[in-house]
Amino acid sequence: MSGTRLPRALRRLAPALLIVLAAGAARAQTVIQNDEPRPDPWIVNGCAIAPKASCPGADLRHADLKGADLAGADLTNANLARADLRHANLRGARLDGANLSGAQLQISFLQGAQAVNARFIGANLDHARMAGADFTGADFTVAALEMAQAGKAKFRKAILNDADLQEAKFYEADFTGASMAGASIRFTIFQDAWMEDCPTCPQTWQTASPAWEMGSPDEARDRRKAP
Image (tube, rainbow, N blue to C red; front, top):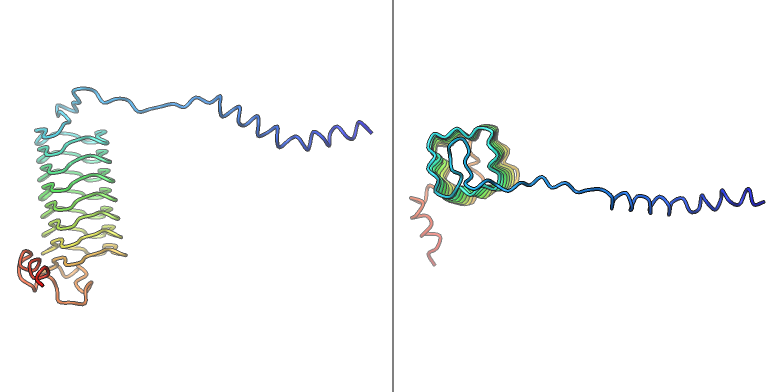
């Protein structure tokens, strides 16, 4: 009798024993932290990574600049192809002519940045903050801007062909002369956006008269505020 009762008792206790053993193994594991402090000064290929840095033409390809504070920096004509700029602060930075193709810019801060004729081909700008930035003539071909916030940004003559613009917010953005062929615009907001001379833009997004028929951006804005 005892020979048959013992295995049954062990079978009943097996789940509890496994939980205890697993908990002990979890406590024994060592958590490895890979976050290393940035060097001070933080210099990458001769460019001092800091607010208002002066790095025109800098070669920062593939650079790990995650979380970098480059507010107001001069990165004119810099090569930032495939650089990691996630969560980076680029507010008011000068990126005219810069190459950011393939760069990671998720949740980056580009408010007021100037990126005239910059290249963002295949770059990832998901959830980026871009309000008031100037992307005149910039190339965003096949770039990802999902859920980006780009109110009042300038995309004059910019190329956004085959870009992912889903759920992005382009309140009062200027797409004059831009190209948006093949872009994904599911749930994208274009309220009061300028789309003059952009036949591939969703000009019928709003049923009212196009914003550019109300005069200049400032005139249209004042007209909407009038009682």
